[in-house]
Image (cartoon, rainbow, N blue to C red; front, top):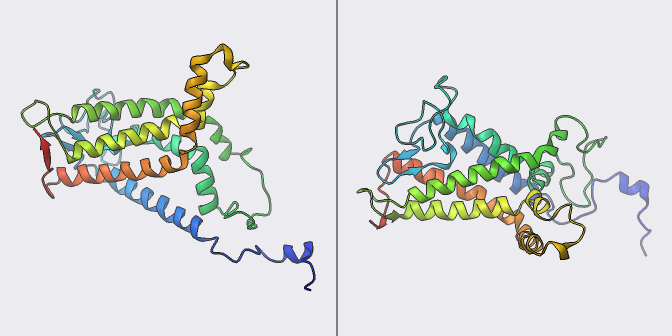
Length: 264
């Protein structure tokens, strides 16, 4: 019989796990890293984001609020001036969208493990000697997640409006193509991710001592709680759909191929 593992022996190894525990954090790092690289390139590319024939607006540029926006892409006006080529239109909106994602409870776990190894996996020692949690700058800023949630609601509403006006054909009547359906799927996933947020769940059902006195809010809280169970999947699905729809609109706007029309 082998001798039992002592505490001192455990301290000399990072983990006793023999499986490939490093694959999930590696995959997360690659996925999030690819999205960040694409987002930076796409933002400062500052072109090919509006298809006037079908009213397609790329998600990365919605809402387009700068005088630098191409004609027709500004559905809500242009309250911001054209400052410089290195200040593209997404700069005015993306900080709020990224703030919501970066402070999201799921994404915190994802990039804490994948980029900071804090910890990289269950039962694996992290390399940091000290642990202060989210009590110091900049991680203390994670507490503003609930406020970014309100901004995310507004952005989701704007993207919904973009999808509605995309149901128009070249002649101005009702019509839709593959791009329209992709935008619709993207909006559904974004609403699912936004409404499954823990802040939304607290907003609906928090600070209630007796659910029996608030049957409507209890019903809503129950539905959001069920949706919250799929928050991780919706986070990744909506992240992928935003990138794919943006890429699709970019290719259509650049003339790489025509948008297949399903009904005009």
